[in-house]
Image: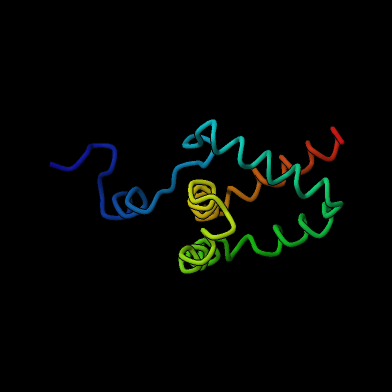
Length: 111
């Protein structure tokens, strides 16, 4: 029998396509990766271009993550596999852009 919270077809559809918050599903390794990327961006003085690029790419993050998966066989030559896979997984969610922006801004303050 259907869950009583999800009565009606609209409620069931809404629940079926609900996305969890990226902050809820992040591991400590994910936070470390985000912080490392932010520190890399700030150390190269690319804060403004990175923020602009992240904001502009927000609607396309899922497509970008799929493109990352397409490049996976070649990218493993230059980037460690676990970090690459973790980054591709993070980019699947549009809300993860906020995590990157927050980390870049924090790294900029600490620089």
